[in-house]
Image (cartoon, helix red, strand yellow):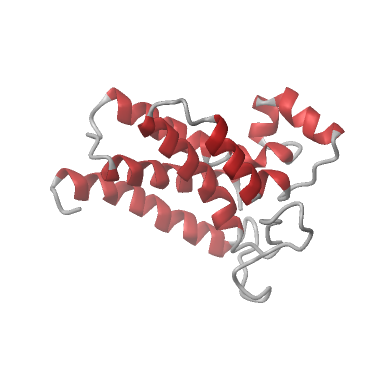
Length: 166
């Protein structure tokens, strides 16, 4: 999936955490959480040369390249997610959960991609949730449709929350 799709998925994840924790969308905490969600949703692609995260976090990206980490392996694995949960546990609960859930949204939606994800790294086989003929190709019309639906959801969540419908 493209960065913009992952960013919107991270945004939706952050909004869901805000709703769950009953945080007003009209607060500084919410603004920070939404920004964090957009960024954390794209972070797993730091292993992909040329990606925005690889450029922003160049030292980490370069280290991953030196270590010959391939795309959709370590950074998309459950093992790294558990490590991130342990390392980031000292941060405040709101931002902790936004970071973890938004980061987890990345490999989750990549499971619908035709290339799959090495979810159980270091175990080699890649996992995908759909048969290859039904899977979503990066940059395809189907991905654009998914991103559009996520954008609609991202607009709906704050409105529904504001009017106490969720």
